Amino acid sequence: MSEKEKRIPIPESLTESQSQYLTQSETLQVQPRSNKLFIGIPKEIILQENRVPLVPSSVATLVANGHRIIIEQGAGDKAFYKDRDYSEAGADIAYSPEQVYKADVILKVAPPTLAEIDHMRPNQILISPLQLTIISADYINKLKHKRVIALAMEYIKDESDTFPVVRIMSELAGLSAMLTAAELMSTTGGGKGVLLGGISGVPSAKVVILGAGIVAEYATRTALGLGAEVRIFDNNIYKLKRIQNQVGRQLYTSAIDPFVLINELITADVAIGAIHSKTGRTPMVVSEDMVMKMKPGAVIIDVSIDQGGTFETSEVTSIDKPTFIKHDVIHYCVPNIASRVSRTASIAISNILTPILLKTSGVGNIEHLLFSNSGLRHGVYTYKGSLTNEYLGERFQIKSTSLDLLMTSDL
Image (cartoon, rainbow, N blue to C red; front, side):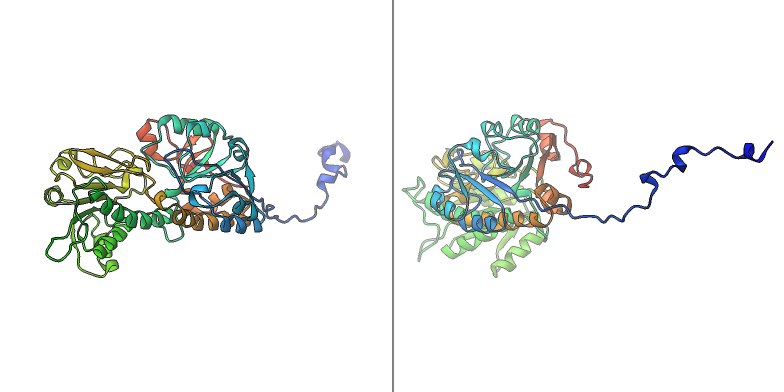
């Protein structure tokens, strides 16, 4: 065999001078170009909602950072912000909901109605509260069908692992709940004509507060300031200790023992439900039988109604008709209680949302921000056609999938 015949044949593709086999220039990773947000703010149409998610000063800040904002005509009227204020801040004024829902990010302070969800489109981002008492399986299924990325404001966490929207609204709710109770106890408010704070020679009213969180803290401060007697119940002993330290005085506190609780409710003039759940429905700790034993004319204010309510007799009410009477007890169960002070509440919400929206400047958009921000991810409950909240899945018998499994990579 000749030397030529012994050679192993080499494919021509490996010997030809083709460009793919030449030395290539080095490539470096390029950061994605920063996309500016297109934010829409529709006018609220349910629950007599008076708040607005962004105030003009926040709009001016976002516009100065290159973001575009469109707001529906009259959206800020009930918070005493005029269209002119938003226009001068750099926002576009829309004259129909359809124009607003062309935006990539929708901000609301009340859950969207089924009709509003019809305006939405795939990959649109919705940031709004998730009020468990008014949503339904149809609501979840519509968001899934639209493939919307929906975030619940009250479940978004900050760097300190707390819920900033819940905290600030809880401060407002605690103050407002106590002042509302004082009003409802008066004769003109439908009560028995009892003054919340005692005067010389007359015993003060008794207030029972369920929960020892932020709502309870600010309700306690207000009640004590007015001269009322306060009882606080919570199963978290650390919270009971914390609230005493925050208030700066010794308080009557107790774990939620049904026997102790019923004895206090029987003589209570005001009972406030202020228990917050981190994931789903708030626990119901007061049964209807316990409410029936309360004295006639007593007032129940269920601040937890947006998460299902702490009292078995609670039913969602609205600002135009905030109360109902059951078993001779006045019930106040408005889910958006902070809406009574709409301007203050709007500024508070805007102060929380604006920094979150500004963080997108370094990563491109809110969806990219979800990859690096676990606190923001915690608020997601539907993601591109999938339900990601386990509690909602169990409640409505809808399959849920972990968001961590759905979001694999942004590359």
